Image (tube, rainbow, N blue to C red; front, side, top):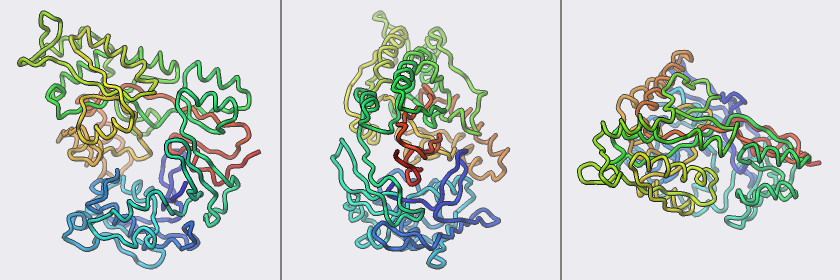
Length: 476
């Protein structure tokens, strides 16, 4: 809402122009973006190639601590800048006021998704006091953001609501809805807020009960489609008990995922066996389904050397098989998953210790490697590449996972320019992930957006939420 990108994705998840068009060199290494000349930031200054170059330079700085992973696209010279051995990034060139190019170290078919979908920041504002190796001056401005997007941030009550006003300088024209308030809702109040008009748009966990309830509101329209997310149990693979693939497979066979999905989502969810959406062109249906099988799970634990003792608890080398499960509060999945997990794993000789805490606390613990196991809902996006999560030393690979075979398969997919063979490359990637199980895959569900009938012009797809189309939305 606040920022804009050089490009966008369409309803199929394919990259399309936004505030810029682009062309790619024949060797696939250089991406040149041509920015529209009427783009302005909300403070009235023009968005230029210098702002684009600054944004990506900042994201490659060593002190940047966000989720952007510069190694995933490998702009030429990014590492030298990151390490402080160069004063600029060799592969980023400002050609003129409205033209900027990026030269990559090697071909990367996913690069366009990152280059086109990165939020552009005004250099004059964020870069005024920026020094290489120190992004603290930018961090200090995060609560006073300036961008070129549809809306301008005005005020907030942290943890409650965030207020925005239409950006009069927006390149598509000022949004017809002048004010937008984003409220923080939870499972306990969102249905009531929808019913009494306290919110106009919200995403609701779909199941038979919630669908029937919202249909009875009469004035709320539903949009239901396959989600571009998946639910999984994150394992800290630095912990000895999870390092053996047979153990991870046993944990998956031994968990009744169907029971969880039936209880939580009904017909609006299905078991997931790979980190990819069924709606994606690279989804692989030919993988191990790991159907619930306690006998198979016990056999795998025995093969891995974890034997049941007289107390029924498995142990190996004098160490009992037990782990701490970090459970976020107010999570409907955990409310169903934990009792099922405890019951299923008790039969396997495993002790589950549940530690409940706030979601933000769990996030920090995962990032710091201070955890055993926790439920996570992962976002997938239009770009099928997940190197940042599964590749050795990926920026978001907090579990410590490493598989050299998978690293190579991911590289092959990134370098393959032909669609049909690239599809096979990614299906090989998911087959390897499905076999090695760095995560316990649980479900993919449908997304369900509830939209008041007084709101029109909202477009939602698996790849874009409601905020992308607010600029053209109307209120009755």
